[in-house]
Image 1 (cartoon, rainbow, N blue to C red):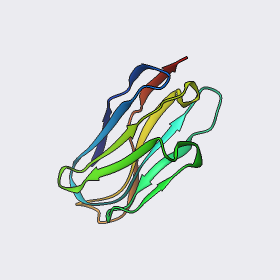
Image 2 (image 1 turned 45 degrees about the vertical axis):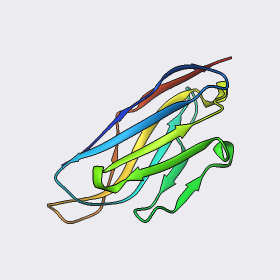
Image 3 (image 1 turned 180 degrees about the vertical axis):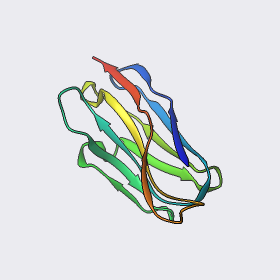
Image 4 (image 1 turned 120 degrees about the horizontal axis):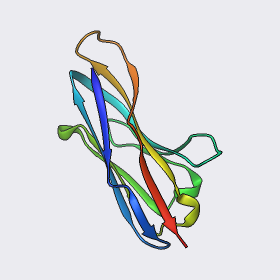
Length: 121
């Protein structure tokens, strides 16, 4: 019904930048909150940043001042600009969306397949 496809991950040196993108496609009626989570080896998945359909944002303390989340509602796409990356940011980053498909008109929680971000020291 709704698919999320991430792109933009890769290998970067400490202090570098990356921009992640996540495009939602399929039979979409509406998308509410969108966000980015990450999961490092041996750790639980954690929230990185989230954004409402109106543009209000929420960040984890460990990325405040370094990462910026934004979205293009016309393109059903959410972005994560990551600056001043640190080795501890190394993880698989997952896109998340609370979306309503055309049928049924109910809210579901969708996940992307994940994209690897590796920061070398």
